[in-house]
Image (cartoon, rainbow, N blue to C red; front, side, top):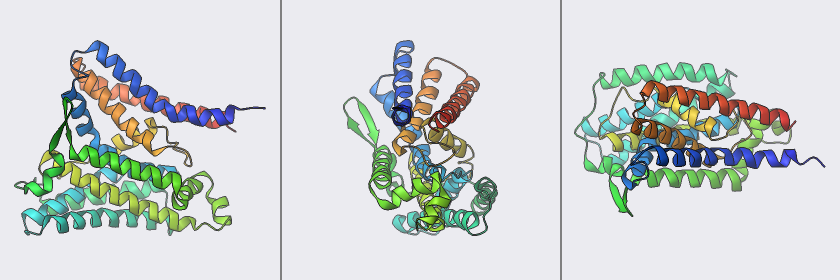
Amino acid sequence: MDTSKSKLPPISQLGPFIALLIACVFFSITTDHFFSGDNLSLILQQVMVVGVIAIGQTLIILTAGIDLSCGMVMALGSIVMTKLVADMGLPVPIAVLAGIGVTALFGLLNGLLVTRIKLPPFIVTLGTFNIAFAITQLYSGAQTVTELPESMTWLGNTFPLGSANVSFGVLLMIALYLGAWFWLRETGAGRHVYAVGNNPEATRLVGIPTERVLLGVYVLAGVFYGIASLLAVARTGVGDPNAGQTENLDAITAVVLGGTSLFGGRGVILGSLAGAVVVGVLRNGLTLMGVSSVYQVLVTGILVILAVTVDQLSRKASR
């Protein structure tokens, strides 16, 4: 009896965590301060925005789609919520909800174009990337929004945990991952996401509303981008109209390194967290080693190609 099909998924799921362990061991040997509490806390704070964006990106990629607009939608959400507070004096909770509402509307727009007009997700989200960028620049006047109340940035505050200072935003990121993991694994709606990505036609034939599932995924992804907007504001203390221009690629990198298949229907959400941390560890460790940022980008690119190659070979072996 051939057991290769049953063995491959667990190996692919463990891959991101094995890569993370290897990277941590390597940098702990080659640098002096990598395993200090402050440095590890810094890594988590640096990846928390991309990490939350990667949750939404994972959901979309599980349906065999992709979202190139996620970073700029996140930036727009941060500008909306900060300007409503700084310029109009709205209460922070209302401003935050408005910002998340805007990012959810972009998710709805993406979803409607993909499900109703049947446009390719790549083209749709490439277009909404530019739309979000233009609106962000016009609404902000290309100016950074400053002088925000402490209540809007408190997620960037830290508390002592052992020898490290952990931010509340990192705790929120972990809680969101655990919630998304439970939803995908233990609920019917979560399993429908996998089914749509694996075989949309077969899923439709068994009575699952595939278009509704896809639309819900894009809207939910938009909500996660809105939460990432708040984390970005908490981390920097400002609303930055120039943010978000690379976070889309960083989020896709995290998802791919995390073992989610670009062909849809296969992946574990916690792997995306590991993938985001792997990228953060690599950049932090190479910086501590004095390696130029150009080589950091090079290493990340090689890892993405390797991850996609492993996914392709795994798919062929499981057929």
